[in-house]
Image: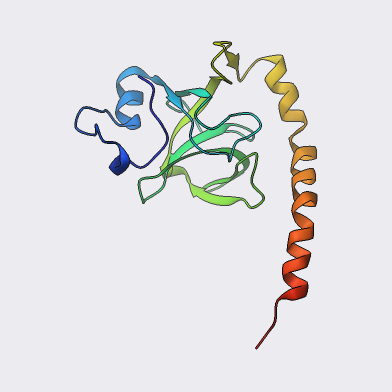
Length: 160
């Protein structure tokens, strides 16, 4: 029942595989392996497993939403602002947010297994809530670390 977040066209067993949407519709929740570094340090590439539930209501700020882009790519990012027509989302290891229409959202993270140890962390747990309180500081640090590269590109870009 473990599935990776990638395009369905990349699944070699697509004829035998249910889509994430089908799993959520039939079972209400599913366990899926993460791929990529956009949610580090919380979730790690091919080591973390997330528990995704079908959204019962409109998402709130700090919820981790699973959505599917029109290209078929699944993305798991955090809601940083709720807009009237969708959500402003951002990965914990990303600098620039993106706007996601509410219709793209197919699930919300209920908890996760950070590594192979089998220790489950609920999104309601005190440890996870403490992590949420550090997000703004983590984002400021990430932005400051990226600043020298942005200044360097600006200083050495030649206009023709």
